[in-house]
Length: 463
Image (cartoon, rainbow, N blue to C red; front, side, top):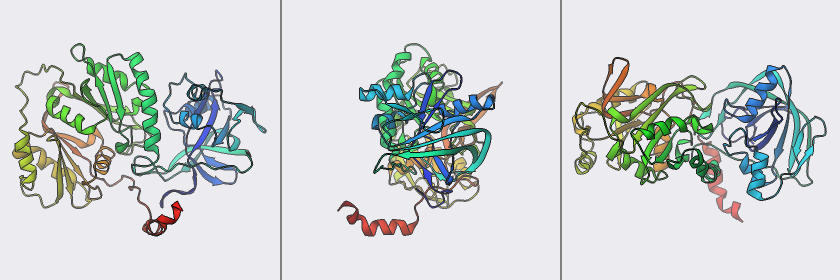
């Protein structure tokens, strides 16, 4: 199907791609979008952190083609396991057997030396040749923006087989919420408790679908000794796909990590930029993240809102007066005249979200510089500036508009920032320039004619 108006063509969006590691024979089943180029070839969107991509890398090092089979449809347990960010050593085929309490049936492929999923609706057999790349995309992905065109491996199809009356599965992703919300949340609910096996201080972890999952991760932890939460954060950022998280917020064990309003209140009560802001300025990022303008590279940030004891000697953090802050917001944002501000909302007396009235180079940055230095707003912890396409009356849209559109190293600022030797010192209000910037891909929006057609025929779809 072709999901969105600017997609580069039709895509297979729910394939179960089965490969084996050429070194040890371990299997991987992953869901990687496949752009249909012609009758015998597709793209294979293996991102840097994906198991199938690691198998291809091993094959490519030896100059060998990688046998690949693709299952469309079949056992729901395996379809779900293909989404899960399992450890590399844990095979999805085995995990699906655990979920469904029955063995995943395999059969031999007809044209290549490989296994196929026996209970699939449709099977594609083929190979991915070494060192072959082809431009793939654009594609409206789950960050709510189009992925730019980039070179990816090519899947060469040798055979297609199917069951009688086969059912073709597809999943639509895009600006949240979409179908992947429920699949992603199911993955977290099943796999989240496993983190506690290796990190007993962790009470819960939650990645927010509103931010495209990887852009916002919250962990509630029990700080058993000074700065243990920061140590925990470093460990989480090294665990599988958690390692692609861009913003990690730490809260204590009494805070609900799955409720962003509760998280904001923890930031209000416990976060002090001088002690609790940790920037990792050069790090690998999700392939889909475009905010650093460098594919696979960018920055991450840790906000410690656990109430860790401060060792800062430069004075105490300012005390927040919620009534004063609320009054400031309700009084039409009592800060210096700013003609470019369209609207603003205050979340939990903690985060002020300001919408500029148009997209223009540096308009968000200039507005933010004024806001973080405005004395009337000095008691806030965070000020975020967003673009006019973000609906501030919708919490999901607001979170999407903030967390998918900034790179911490590039787009975060504070009221005061300086260096003490090589150590950066931050103080005051944390500002986030989350406006859409020239060079970013377009946000995903449906063709208005399609919207009107669906609205017109909506009742027919349920008859």
